[in-house]
Length: 312
Image (cartoon, rainbow, N blue to C red; front, side, top):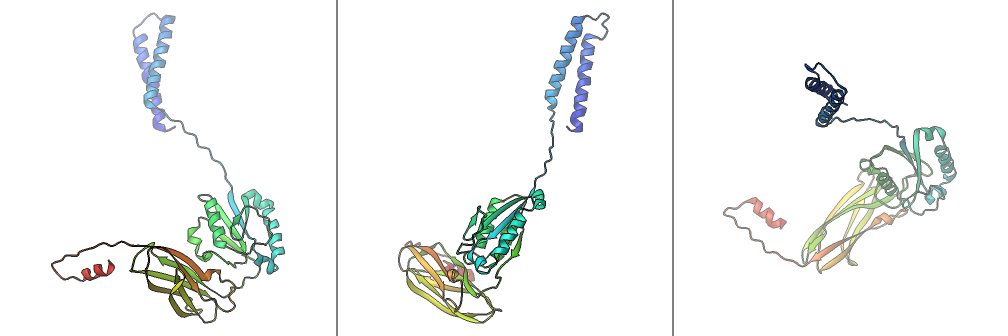
C-alpha cells in the first residue's frame, strides 16, 4: 500500500472521529449506552464512506525462482553412425542428461532430429536426411519467450533445408554446438534463394533472380537451367571458386499461356558431390490475361516519364 493511501486512511479515521465527537459528545453532559452505540455506528458509517472514496489497493509481490531451460538437440542421422561416432554420442548423451548438477540448475529437455525434430530422444542413427535448420527453428517456436539455451550435438553435415549458419539472428536463444564424427565440409553447390513474382501478364516477360552458393576449395564450372512447364527456357554456364563462392543470375522469361505455371531451377551436379538434393528448386507463378490502358499526359519533357513508361 502506498504512503499517500495510508495517510488518507489516517485522515479518514480522524475526520470520522471528529464528526462523531461533535455530534454526540460536544457539550453533552450525560452519556447513555444508546448514545454510545449510535455514535459507534455513525463512526463506522462515516469511515466506510471515506474508505470507499479513497479506494485503497493492497498489492502483494511473490517471487518464484524458475529454472533456465537447457535443451539438447541430438543428430540422429546415419552420418553419425557411418563416422563411427555413435558410441561417443550415446555416452555423451547419458553423461549430460543424467548429470545431477545440471538437473539441479536447469530444466533438461532432449530431442533428436533427422528430417524433423522428435520428442523421442532415443538415438538409433537411422534417419537418412539431416535438417539442422528445421530442428533449430522448431525448438525456437517451442521455447519462444522463455529463458532457454540450446546445445546442438551434430557432425554439421546437413542434407536438406536452408543454410543453418545464418539462422542465429532468427533464434531467440543462444546455441552452443558440440561437433562429433566426420566434420569434413564436402563439395557442394546449391540454390539458396529464388526471387519470383506471384503473378505475370500474358505475353509479357517477368523477372527471375537465382542466388547460388558454392562450398569447396577447387574452381568448378556448372550450369543453371530453368524449365517452364517442362520446356527449358534458360541456361547459363558459370564458374565458382573458394574466393568467388556465390553468384546471382538474373533473367527475363516470357509468359506464353494463362494459368498456374511450374518453374524448375536446376544446377548441374558436380563430380563427386554427395548432396544433390539442394541443386533443384521448384517455384510457381500465375499467368493472367489482363490489360489496362494507361495514359501519361504532360506538358514538358522529363526523365521520370521514361522511367514510368519502362516500369509500367
